[in-house]
Length: 105
Length: 516
Image 1: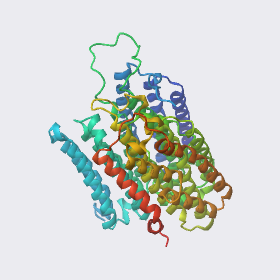
Image 2: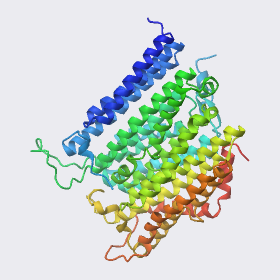
Image 3: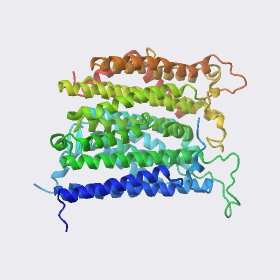
Image 4: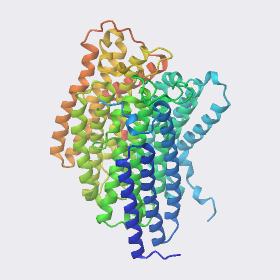
């Protein structure tokens, strides 16, 4: 196993920051809700990389336990999201965000 | 050291236990029960929530549990009361609408509501990053499903795919779905943003426990980034501007009794989470978060009050009014943080926040229930809430004082309370928040907030004018059904009673945060 010293930690944090930014870009630009959910997933994985990197750097198990919880949270969140996408698809036959734009002032 | 040491003090989780066991029990009962009389599940939920609410008074819930990850203090207990009361009124006022939307699947709704409440009650005492995030998500996930719940089961049966993408001019079944989707997308993204910030906090402090974090964290650019992401993420949840875009759409699209619940309980929980973090491990780093909170306050007050004025849909208008109200809540937080920073003392700020959240809960739920009562009386059995777009415009209130004097009076009371007119409960909440802010040295902000609140009266009074000063025309008489009427009556009594005698409740809030 690779020892996570300060240099490796820095690289991992940069990786996670890049992944997070990619996810944000995806969420902001995608017109399809499935694509949007994928962006969300990228952001969540950036969080996981952060937590695991910190956990290995500092030792101890708290960070790894935290990661398990965030993985479970993300899965639950995406499951609810997909249910909502199915609901939208049933009524509008589309998964584009434009299909859900009837509410406005 | 035995394996059961971690369970020491677990009895302070009694209320959460009632809610958790209740939620699972409802799930089982829902499966076991014949389809005909699911309404009983609603009454069971009411009973459970009343039981939990009573338990916050009769049991001693102070102490530490789960090895220090969970702390029961006055603040947490008071928060739990607000959540449970909001849940109680949400179920009571929404019973008819829930039964109408999904007569055979109402059990789901109550079960989701209980799960969401469980997340909130756990959140109120969380002193650990993991518990904080898990309970926060447990609160949020059911809400997404509940917002879209009105869209279930009513979509027409079709054989084969639709011939083209062309939609009928009026699609009646998708407004709740859209509301749920918007709430979900914003909520999920904000959760992940807050989570990223929290992962950075964990990296800086090296622990998930708040008391350790308070000692080990050092200020720096990474911490500023983490705090910004956390404050931004939670600001989405409480619907403070500029993170408020989901608020009006979700309020307009989702079923009104659910909006009554959504507009108060999760927001109070968002405040509980913010207080936990900002006045806990970050209390020593007020310079990182105070400017952000200050910016949120100013933008919320401006956007909320100004954008509410042109709205014709009452639910959208109340959405924006809620944004402005969140500005007031954040002001209490700001005052509490300032006092904690300068003198290191417990401050009245937290007490004012608790009182404000309770006052907002009572008046805001009341207004939404009055809207529901008016809309429901013009609705036929098989008609969905979103069939008529005119359902919730200001026009439906025309001449309400002649169509139903009681409802009009209650509506007037709630609106005046939200607007901060003496002597309703909301007046004392606003005055107390502003006084605390003045003491904390934000005189200019007090002036700004008072001025914008006065401007806000304009749209609150528009509702009152519609009810009292316009002729009713040929609009029918309105009678609220029993449960809804009872909810409105109770809320109106609370608004009036606490408005006339605010002293004991304020004193209780002060005691809850360890003052007096």
